[in-house]
Image (cartoon, rainbow, N blue to C red; front, side, top):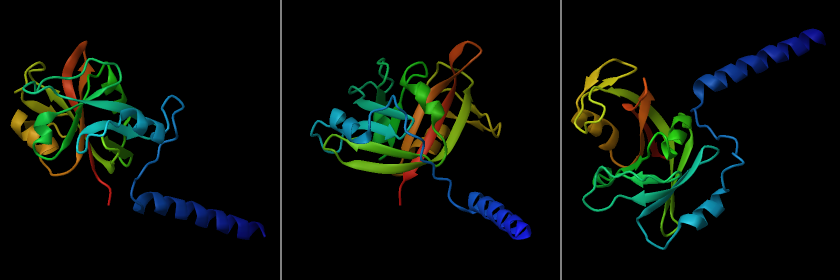
Length: 200
């Protein structure tokens, strides 16, 4: 009997290992008591405007209303504590770019992880679902310049501002979260991008 139990335990451990290796890494975070439930969040952001992004929700991680950039102000980012800003230049390419300062709503972007579900809420209540698929971290060689060159913190490769924009904002329908990385007392030292692709 003991040998049978031991064999079953070994099989269970091996199956658990194989599941972790071969199943897609889709994560459902445990609910955060500080976040509203999803239905309540949707009701709080809808305003009847079809096609206009009004909120983003990641279970257990964040629930942020989304503000649009004013016309002609591509560098505008909301100064409100818990609000993300939709990047209009990205929207021109069919991409939902969500900007936030790292000392405000952008703090929550650092809690995103590969495989997490992202729900984008439109003004008419339509919800589109995405999954976090990639994360990129860069040092900005000229931290306060919009045309700075960048160094990939993982590969150490160099990218121009244009090449980086193309990489994170020019891929068809997806969501890109963007905030700054603070280091050595400099809040704009680097950039964090999290890319989520459409659910299939």
